[in-house]
Image 1 (spheres, rainbow, N blue to C red):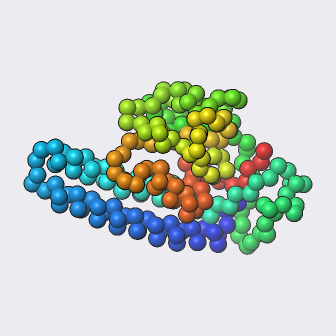
Image 2 (tube, rainbow, N blue to C red):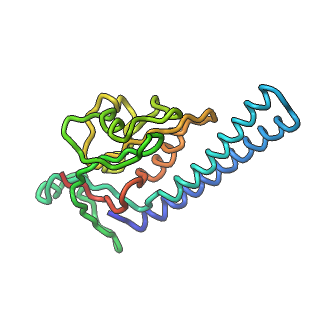
Image 3 (spheres, helix red, strand yellow):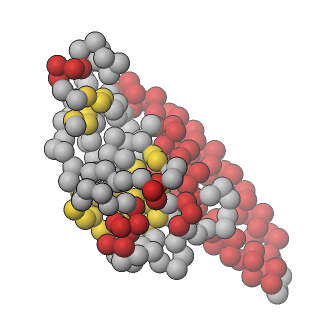
Length: 209
């Protein structure tokens, strides 16, 4: 469901986070650049690498902001009959939009893999099985921080390699980046603000199973 009041609140919080994060990254980047000015040797090389990582981080911040779908309220239901009186039986507001998607039948793999793609969901396959179908990871893949965006908009990063994937999942393989905070933390910060990040088709709001 898309809700205007939620969208306005999320937009304000997301904008505040982006401004704060951009200021922090810009200041950190400027400090690194100043420290590396005129230097040579291993220290200068390391500073250059960190500078590039910070620049990439700023680009990622912009990319994340552009992919966020605001205003989504996830309503879980097994059936209309079971919804009445349940926790997800919320009151409607003016201009609410209820969207009931087709049940997903695929799993997407994006990020640092050789062939980012969307493949057909198969019962029993785990994260590594789908990554292999995407050609495997690249040399710069951070396999320790792989995580899954579920079809209901939640993020799962705990023991995902041993969990069975579900239809509609998006497997994210981050790139190795030395700058802190880790890439996953940046995504989770945004996800925590808005409740979900849209990486696949927009409009998934009511999950029918």
